[in-house]
Image (cartoon, rainbow, N blue to C red; front, side, top):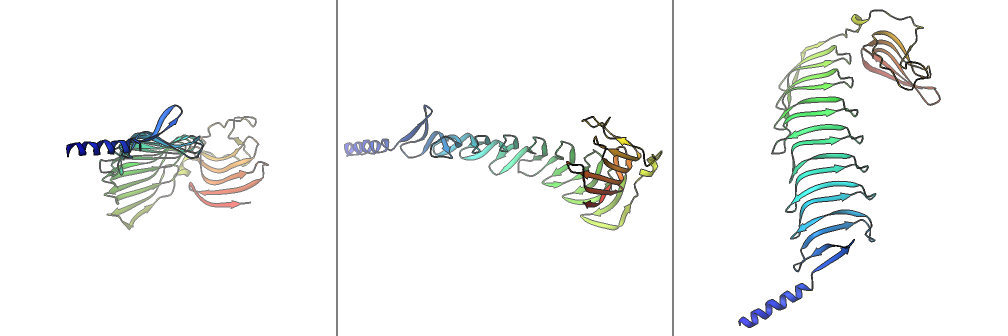
Length: 307
């Protein structure tokens, strides 16, 4: 009986030894399966049958993904770097745009982000920075940014919801909105501001419901800052001279006309520290023909006219 059992084991091993497979790629053993047909070691998957364009690659242990796996775009650029533990995504993750600029990055634990997570514009500037607790809920400081990197929104989150003061900014850095939150609902005062920084509106909320009777509107204080008004035929250049190719910063207050290097009128009206509050902006095509006019009132775009 023992002899028969030993012969059966040897016969079984011989059969499965013949079933072990692998491939050779660039003098390296890849895509190996063991006697039990389980993937082992380094595996490379390709877009094409000629095996010239790699789709993704990484390591298997007993048929389970383990360690860092890399995926690629068809142009060969890196698409993602994801860490696995026993076939589960767990660890630092980096995702890329097709030009290899980082699109997202953070620590992923099976089905949720943990800690700091960043998302990027295609120009490599940060779109937003979120923070997550161990349950995958947004918690702590959260920040959003304009495409040029200027801060857009910042505030605090607890258990996945806004908590406390959340601030929103204009692209010039001035405060745009200040809102008080409690457990994801507006609860308290919400202040809205003109682009100049002057208070525009103040409204009260109670547990997410607006108290319209407790809303106050304010006129901008631009007129208080106007010292003198320039004559209508006065010329101000946004360039140091018409031949320059680099704009000089304009921080004027009061009435101004602004021209570009081609001596075409770009803006005219009342300004506050370099920003148009009441007036018009003009846009031209490459031939210098007017194609669009924007009309601003109290710092807000009120009308667009196309030609």
